[in-house]
View 1 (cartoon, rainbow, N blue to C red):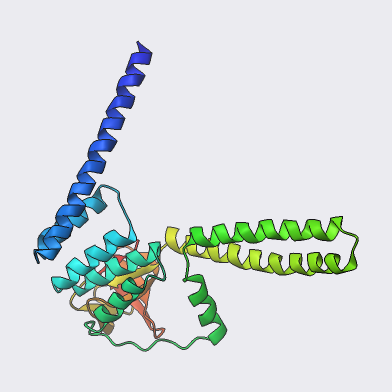
View 2: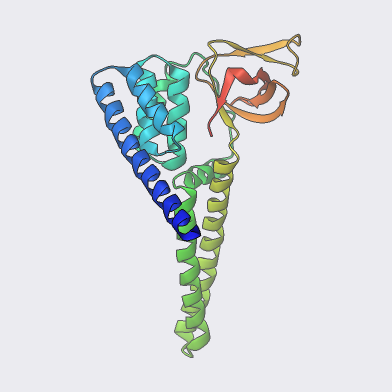
Length: 254
């Protein structure tokens, strides 16, 4: 009897998965058609339904961002473009669309200057996903082991030097790529960036509605979330200024 129950459950799960896959495909095609027919509200509905079913990809978030952009919803557009970057950090289409959408953001905030080496390292780290960096680190690790074997198993001075210095160089590359992989994964699992969704959101000196307004942010501005307390979030903008904003005024890039 138990065997038949297991078979029935397996068949039910298989049928459910197949039906969901078919539904997702239909929604994707329906959303794409609605977009090209300039029915952007319908496109948003179809793409959001796909996301609600648990499916995520750079293409989905790019299309969703485009549909929101066409509807004039800059905050939602930038939110989804930034979500697309999690899957494809160096995608030129996504980066271009972010540049275009940012032109419609009211807040023009100066970026706090950083040391060029730190900036270069961040750009390099963001050029690939955590999985890509992890794969590259395994390649460097394997090559390092081979170089080590060359050093240990050969008696020729020339090849021992090649093996020794090669192993050292590959060790450095392995450590860097593994660190990049861990750093990118940490960002993915513990996102701290958000987009302002309100047309005008006051940033306060403390997590209290009656506290002093420090400045006002507008839809589409990207912020870093540093802390939370009740209905407020402590945020920092790109010029280094900090304050508290209502949680409902922002949406996390998660």
